[in-house]
Length: 495
Image 1 (tube, rainbow, N blue to C red):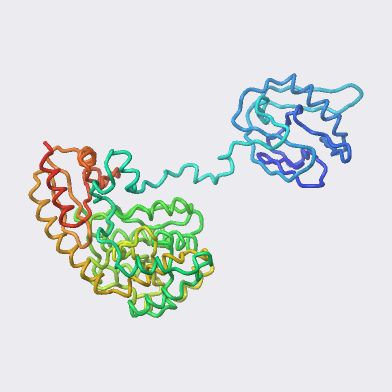
Image 2 (cartoon, rainbow, N blue to C red):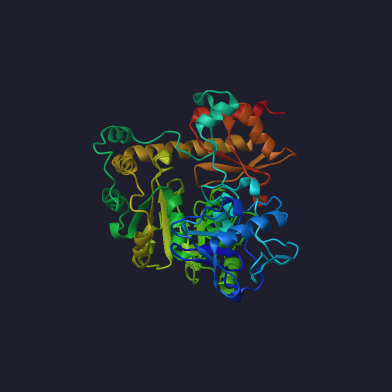
C-alpha cells in the first residue's frame, strides 16, 4: 500500500507497505481493524518506517488495540480495505488527532499517531463486504459547485402542478413552434423500418438535405442532438480547464452553463441598455484576457435583437473563435451567415430545427464549421448522436418548404399583433423583436416574478428571469392568435 498526503493506492498482488520517506504532514494511516479480512492462502505484509515486513496478523492485533485506544468520532469519509488486494484508490480526508503511540510486547516497532493528521473512520458504517465512501467524493471538484440548469417544465409537470389538463395550458414560455412540424414528419416517423439498427454516425442523408437547403457543401456541416450538444462539443474541443470565454449577457444561459461544466472561466461583457453589443469593450477584453472564444446569438435570446454585418465583421477581426448561434434566424428577415465559414477560419454558425420546423422534442441541431475545425469535432463527437427518428423527421421537414414558410409568416404576423397589444398593458414595456418572442420590462411597481406566477395560476405560462440583468423582465413567446387572446384576457384580470 502506498500512502501520499491525501491518497491511498493499493495495487493487486502488491504487499501493503507504508513508506514514510516521502511524507510532508501525513504521519499515520489507520484501518478499521475489525473489518479486515485475512486470507490464509496469501497474507499481505505491512511495513513501517524501516520497510521490514511485518506479518499482517500482527498489524491486525495492533490495530485492534489502537481501535480501542483512539477516539474515532463520526466522519463523512470512511476508509475500508480487504486483504484480497483488490484495486482501490480513494481520496480520504485528514483531520487533526492527539499524539499517542503503542508498542506491543516482543517488538521494537511503534505505530505512531501524530497530532498533524489521521484518517477518520466511522466504526458504525464499516462493512466486511466492500469499500464504502461518500459518493460525491468521486465527482470532479468544480462540478460539486455547479448550480443546475433550470429548464422549462414540460406539459405533464405543469398539468400536475396547476391542476389543469395539458390542452388547457397556454405555453408561451419556451419559444416553441405551436404549429408543429409539417405533416410529412409524422408520416415519416410512422414508416421507420429499422429502429433497432444504430443510426448513421455521419447523418449523411440529413447533411445532404441541409447542403441543398443552405447552399453550403455537406463537408462543412455537422449535425447534433440539438444545438445544445454542439455548444458543449465545441467547448470540449476548444477549451482546456481554466481557459476563458466571452459571454454577453443577457443572452442564452447555456453558454455560461456549459463553460462551467467544462471547467472554463466566463468573462462577461454586458450589453448596452438597448441590448446591442459593446464591441469596444469586447475588443478590450480580448486584448487583455486572451479568451479562446466568444458566443453570440442573433437574434439574441431573450430580447430579439440582431447583429448586423458590420458589427460581426469587426468581431471576426479579433483573434478569437466566434460562435454565432442562429437558432431564431428564420424570424429575423436577414440571411444566415452559414456560408461565411468558408472564408472566416474563426467562425462557427449554429442552427436548429426546434423553432423553424417544430421539432424541439426530437432534438435536431446542426452547425457550419471551417474545414480546419470540423475535422476535430468529428473525432470527438459521440458516434450515434443523432437518432434515426430525429434524422428521418428533419429530412421530412425539409421536403415541405412551403409549409415551413407559411408557419413562419403566420408567426411573424402574430408577433406584430402581440407587440401592439402588449404596448396597451399599462405595466408592460415591450421591446421590438426579430424573433418569435417579445421581451417586456415590468413597470409601475408590479413584481415580474409575481406576474409570472399569477398568470400560471390562470393557465398561461410566460418566462421570468432570476438574473440581475433581467430581474424586472418577462419574455412572452409568440403563439397562435388564440394563445394571444388568452394571454390578454388574463392580463386584464390582474389588478
